[in-house]
Amino acid sequence: MTADCPGNRRCFLKAGGLALAMQALPALATPHARTPARLVGRGQRPLTTAELVPDEAYVFHYPYVSTPCFLLDLGEPLEPAELRTEDGQVYTWPGGVGPRRSIVAFSAICSHRMSHPAPSVSFINYREERVRYLDKAEQERTEAGVIYCCSERSVFDPRHGARVLGGPAPQPLAAVTLAYHEDGDGLTATGTAGGALFERFFERFGMRLMLSHGPRYQEPVGEWSRVRPAADFSSNQMRCG
Ligand code: FES
Image (tube, rainbow, N blue to C red):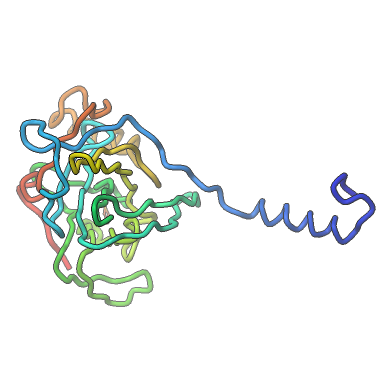
């Protein structure tokens, strides 16, 4: 018998069962705090959330000079959600921020084979219109407001932490945590949550990233990050579905 259950067999069994149940619980991953970066518009002027057009995708880079992210105002309050990475870590997506709690950001690096927006082309895009896709059970679905990667047709749900709706992606897009500044109506990126793929991204695309972003491509983005419409960032947006 343990010191907590002196001579009490029922108490001992209960305590043992509780310990086993706790061992079976998956680890709860905390968000990864990173160097904050203020989101800015043209001329490094702090971006205001009032400038964001609802249901239009924007691109900025965070936490590194060359790692693209989507910024979206989805137009409705978004509640936190509990999600799981490919390796079984459970994490909490914090939901939307801003005056209507409708603004979210995610890494735009697909969690399947890391397709991502580049200036010449983007195979992964936010789709405000209704699109068709196959869900995890291979059933055809139609939905608006999803992030669709046309490389191998993975589909993510930005209203629920970019969880996977269909396709081969093994985990949600990593989330970018945002702080909202009521005073000035601005936004700061503060970290990431979920399965970030930055090391693998650098290994796979390093040469091309160096050509487009220079030798600092693996460095933190710095005190601010420029936000621009996704349609301006990538001259060709491949749209499937
Ligand atoms: S890289 Fe996005 S689905 Fe394969």
